[in-house]
Amino acid sequence: MLTNLRAVRTILKSNKFWIILFATIAAISVFLLVIFSFNSGTTVQIFYKDKLIDTMDLSENKTKQIKLDEGYNIIEVKDGNVFVKSADCKNQICVNSGKKSSVGSAIICAPHRLTVKITGESSADADT
Amino acid sequence: MKINKLSLSALLLAMSIAIYTLESFIPPIGGIPGVKLGLSNIVTLISLMYLGKGYTALILFLRISVTSLINGTLISFMFSLFGGIFAFTVMSLLILFLPKKLIWAISVSGAVFHNIGQLTAAAILIENLSTLYYLPMLMLSALITGAFTGITAQFIDERLGYIIRRKF
Image (cartoon, rainbow over all chains, first blue to last red; front, side, top):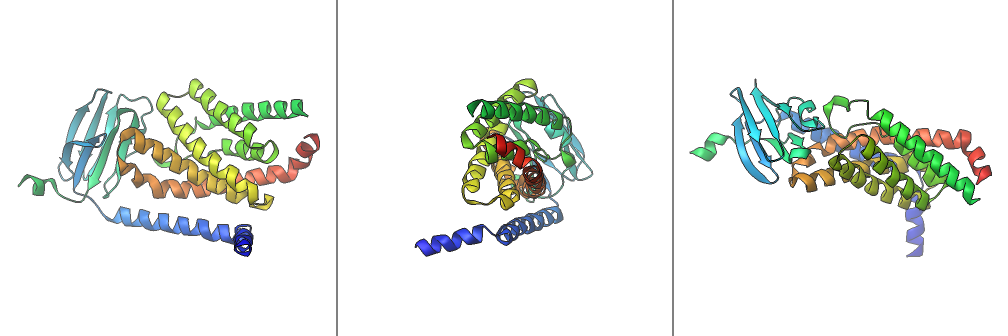
């Protein structure tokens, strides 16, 4: 037990162990990013907290204003991309997040507890 | 030697507030929230090395409080606090048994957990797990910026460490 602990300690104290660990994390992150960017989505889901409050189709250009108790966000779909055009939140992170089009990507407005999320399932399936 | 420690911690606190405020003028890279240099982590590392856990926790908490009062909201305070607690816990544990040449690894681990803490805060706040989408990007940025701040702290220790150590 004690020798095991000592072995673990010597491994932890080597530069190599940490370089390999961090390189692995980097590789997994890059892999996930590449996978994300290849899947373009079809539907935009708009959540307030964990509730789905609205959906939009990524294939049609449209602008929607979402009004919440915390404030408003204007969400626009244009040429297969979704972005927050304007919002009255203080930090404007959602506006600065830019355009999103791939599955799983999300725009988050933390002050309004709003999430704009892209999924692969189409909204037409849900209707019919 | 308590006065010396007190004055060094005051100096470090002032420095970290100045660095953090200056850094907040730089817009996040690529518009991704949370992707930033985290230069004030250098100060946290230095104070962990020379002043120990207690002083560092105090410096970190005061830095977060003061900078949130200067330029921030209750939400940004919560984000910083979560990130700070996560990073501090990991770094203060690792510094117990890692040598000085691995300061960079401690820094990277701290940066990684800082970003995990911020994502946790975001997930709690908006009550939605889609924040996890940002995880790979935040991990990459933490690896790069953490290595940068860690190597900087290591250089500071090599060049100035003997002066600071003589006094304390």
